[in-house]
Image (tube, rainbow, N blue to C red):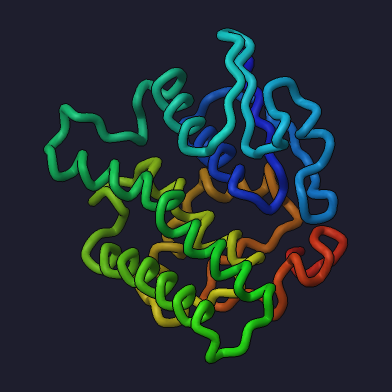
Length: 240
């Protein structure tokens, strides 16, 4: 089996590198650099990836190529991970439902709210602008729900670390290089990030995929968006 994981630096494809490290499976990592903000030609030129999406995988055993981080996570878990880090329908119904909900919450609810906030921020709207108020409110509600969940649960699906956590962490860490969100009001999210950041699998993934990047595991985001300062041509994302 040769599973090739194409990883774009400072992006949500860190999820798949982390997943592979947690599962302990063999994979080939191919790294791509932003040009300097958008997807580079090295990703767009891959067969089956005309949009230049990351993460993107190639499975030589099956001939499958796949994008979308949630789809890739499920493919790897069930094809090569023996179902590890997932919760199936044979589990307690409430635990199974919680896993499904939080696995999909990252990309269906929180990440869109963060992206809307990012674009509103780039538009430099005044504080009183209605659109800014709506975007801020939507993001706060999404983060507060996450914080409330983590108040009484160490991990999103309950007592065990799962792929739902791998899907979530990018949203409240690396994504904040693009949308300047403070996590100071969300103490349970900050505890959660500390716990995730201490996992050996996470540390290995960050060192392999983004060795120069400073992981955003604390409350404050950078003073300026990575987009505002020219993407990877700047050094605000780099370890000091």
